[in-house]
Length: 548
Image (cartoon, helix red, strand yellow):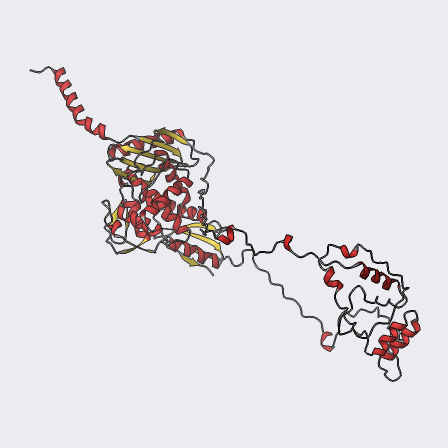
């Protein structure tokens, strides 16, 4: 008979033999918990160890899809084609067929709730053209969000070389989904949804049903990664986001997550100053293209026929005899202007006659031309010295008047007679400037307006119309029916935070009706009410415009 202690030892050895392979093959464990309101860490264990994220990858896939919708690149009802690569992805999958087209809203539901790999691949290929290009965009977005130890190679999270992340980075991404896209965040708390071609159930249903306040976010599992979970939960004013990587089973993973969240809620204060994450620091890559031009002989060697300054002809010098004659002419009395230049040669500039002075101005002797003038550095000197002086244009209507003005430089009376003779006579009245009558003085009377018989009547009385301060804001919107007042108020708050520019000054109200609780916004303009409903319609939210 075997003693009792020996039996206990045998059972221990047998149990160790059974559990040893599972322990040796289990993925490394990591955990990270933060206060979602501030981003401050509460608990950490191997938080920066690079591990396989499995289907937690789809959180970034969905983040990229939400970003594209908000930027207007795609719409929720955009039709995405299904490639053979996406249709051949292993389970979990929605069951898409190659060549099929499906709306983006259904792909998002399938990827978020069922964790469908074919839906995630279709999203990536539809947004970036290929899964490889989409994976590069996902990695760039991860860097912009502060995820320093993450690298993506696909959109679904199946094990692949170089595809890794950490518990810290996945927790940061979960917090980003809550703050950056509150209008889509409720999809992570759904237990089931219509994915277009099938009704899908949530892979996180157990944890959502078992833990109080849990509202997401994503599960993941592969043999290399183990059982992973990024969860978010709220109790009162407190909200926590946590990640567990490397769980040994679904039950073990959920149990560890519940313990971490319970401990976190007990440690964080009830009220803190909320610190929202900043906008992603996206860096645009600038590509500069340079033209490749083959060098030519003309560009690398000097042109032997090109004229250079040292080979140009020197300027023509003027002889000293010409300069002396110019000085003599300048000192001589004014001579009458010659009639026409000779045909054999024109008059040079140096030998031209000095123009006549204005009437009443004494004629001063012109200074002699310096002998150094011909040696000027001006290149135009040779040309000017040989130019022909142009003929003067007549200054009056008759040649006789011009001659009189020229010869009567010192006689003002002669100038007056010449002007009078040149002007036409009208009835014996002179139109010359000196004999014209003085203008009449300007009247000091100011005429404000000319009033006829029709202006004598009294003006009509003005009608003063007063309007209320909120004139034109008698419109509003209703947002469907909800089972609980809390859910309706949450929708109003989320909408006010998201569309604050349009809903500025709007009044929020939840009506308790027989059919349920109806949230609404009031005190809107008609244009803003219609715009609000259009935005809610793009998010698949029922909305109706009510007003005047």
